[in-house]
Length: 517
Ligand code: XMP
Image (cartoon, rainbow, N blue to C red):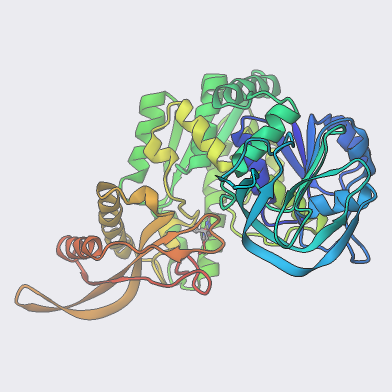
C-alpha cells in the first residue's frame, strides 16, 4: 500500500486514482500526518503531492522527517520534489521562468523511474517526454546522494533521484492525462520500485468488502435508503450479496423522479436480484409540502426534510434494525476530513440524505468509504448491476424539483418527464450519452407562442442542457450536432402536449451552474 501526503495540489486526488488504477491500494492524508500514524499505516512507498505554496514562504509545509527514514521509496511530485530537496539538504530557488502547461522533458536513460519510458527518441539518445508542468520554484542544487534524471529548457533539474535510497522527484505532474506517459511512470514507481502487486482489482475489492461487512454486522439487520443512484445501488448489491435477507431497502418515490424510474428500481433490485425493497409512494406528501414554494433553496430544504420524515416513518415500522447503510465514497471522506482540518479549498454543499434522528441509535455501515467513483462503478458491474444504471449521469437528490423552475406542479413534472425521456433516449440512440457528462431537460414556467397545425398555441418552453466536465466544478456545454438537436426538438414539440418551443443552453460553468436552480 502507498501513502500519499497531500500538500494541497488540485491534482492530489488524481494521484490516488492513478495508483488505484495501477491496482495498488493507497490512501491520501494531509501532509502533516503525524509520525505514529505514518508508522501504523506501514506504507510500501510514499508519494508527496504538489501544492500551491513556495518552499520559501515563512510557514512552509513539510513532510514529517520520518518519511525519509522508513527505508521505503519516496516519490515527490512538483512541490513534493521541492520539499524533499529542501528537507534533504539541497536548494530550491524561485525560477526566473515560471513554467505552466506543456513542456518537453529530456529524460536520462539510466534512472529506474524513467528508463525506456518516452514519447519520442531524440537524436542525442535522450528519451523525450511530453509533460504537464505547473511550478514557480525550481531545484537549484541537489541534496547529497542525488543525480539528475530529467531536465527541461528552464529547469535543468526537472527530475532527480537517489537510486540507493530509492528517492525520486519530478517537477512535472505524471498524474494528469496531459503527461502522456504519466500512468506508466506511476506504475513503474508503485510496481517495480515499491514492489506492490496488482492486488486492488474489482474481484478482490468485492471479496474484501464482503468479509468486512460480514464481520462488522454479524447477524444484525441493516437498513438502506435506496435512491436508484449509482452509490446506493452498489451498496444494495454488495450488502445483499454479503448478508442476503438481513438487508431491507427503503425506496422513496418522491414524485420527482424521471420517467419509469421507480419501476426500474423495483424491477432491478426486487424482481431480478431478490433484494427486499419497500417502495413508498410519497408523491402526494412531497408535492403537498412544495405547494406555493418557489425559492430554490427552500425547495431543496423541503425535499430533504420530507425525505427524512418519510424514511423515518418507514424505518420505524421495521423491527430490530441495528445498522444504517450509506453510500459514502472516498472523495466525501477526503472532503470532510479536509473540511475538519480547515484545509479543503472547495466544498460542495449538496447532500442527498440529511441523516436520521439520534434516538434511532443506528450504527453506520459504509462499505464504499474507501472507493473512488470509478471503482464503485467497476464493482457495480462485477456485482451484476446493469451498466446503464452504473454509468448513468448524476441526478440531483431533489430530482425534477430543481428542474421545474419556480413552484412545482404535478402536471409540469409530467410534461418535463416526457421531454427529458425523449432527449435521453435520443442521446443513447445516437451514441452520444456516454460522450457527455450530464444531460437533462428543464421546464420553464413561461409561455411562448407557437403554431401547431393551423392553430396558434400559447404553450410552455423546454430547455435542454448537456455538459462535458471531469469534476462538475467547471463544465463546458456539449457541442451536440445541429441535426441531433433538430431531431430532439421536433420530437418534443410533436409528442409532448403543452410544449411549443425548445431551447438549448449554451452557458458554461462558470458563470452558469449545471442545474438551472
Ligand atoms: P451545479 O448546478 O451546482 O451542479 O453546477 C453540480 C452537480 O451537482 C448536482 N447537484 C445536486 N446534487 N443535490 C444533489 O444531490 C442537489 O441539491 C444538487 N444540486 C446540483 C448537479 O446535478 C451537478 O451534477
